[in-house]
Image 1 (cartoon, rainbow, N blue to C red):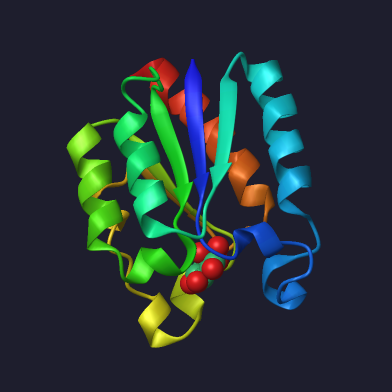
Image 2 (tube, protein in one colour; image 1 turned 180 degrees about the vertical axis):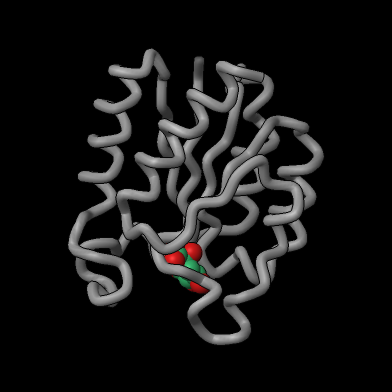
Amino acid sequence: MKVLVIQGPNLNLLGEREEELYGGATLEEINFELEEVGKQLGVEVFSFQSNHEGEIVDVIQGAPVEEYEAIIINPAAYTHTSVAIRDALLAVRLPYYEVHISNIFAREEFRQRSLISDGASGIVTGFGTVGYTLALQGVSRHLDIQ
Ligand code: DQA
């Protein structure tokens, strides 16, 4: 199984950005852990981060050609604003899983609305950066039984 992990804007700053909200792990550490857990699960993980909406759209559009079976995405601030990312996710018809490090429903009102949640196969929010691992484990089991 191949899974694409997409990280949105400012997540390249993990480890130094608002640590009280997002924790101390860097993106590199998260990617390493996902690869390791992926190996245990028999899942090939490819991780991608961008600060640019159009680049994220391009990578989502390319996912079926690259033969990914699922997408795990934390669109970061684009969660709350990007119709383009929503449309791309719906267009490619791959199951996708939404991850947020913080609990977006316990934060400012503008963060409590996600433009992608209604199409997501699953959502993990508020577990810190462990949420990525939980999502990968969830995806592997979820797709296995479907
Ligand atoms: C976030 C929550 C978003 O509101 C915020 O813009 C982020 C990170 C999270 O993982 O908790 O950049 O997606």
